[in-house]
Image (cartoon, rainbow, N blue to C red; front, side, top):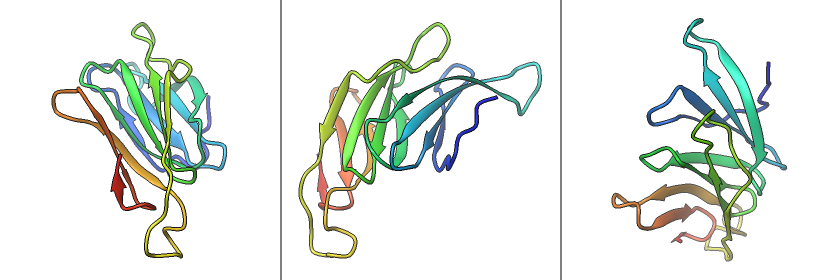
Length: 137
């Protein structure tokens, strides 16, 4: 079994029996699980990878389920993790971006806080909304 402390956001793979969960902590991790078809409700731990940022809070995938997009709230970073097509495991990150800036509410917006990370409908561009800067990256 693989425990996931503070799994505040989970996402099912778009077409295969896999589930991904954030570990929303200062040194964030993303956990991958196989959904056990023989025993409904049971998850089998596959692996985990660093989210390359603190407080991962949002996950999304491309339609084919080849990449997992991660938003890290605490650090204002976003990360792209490839998904292994054979077993649903996560590979080491292949892209990373750091948001910079702040906005008007000094209590909540003193630094960047990536809040989500999504692809456009044509999967040509990736967009991230940042709560801390009031910007779309």
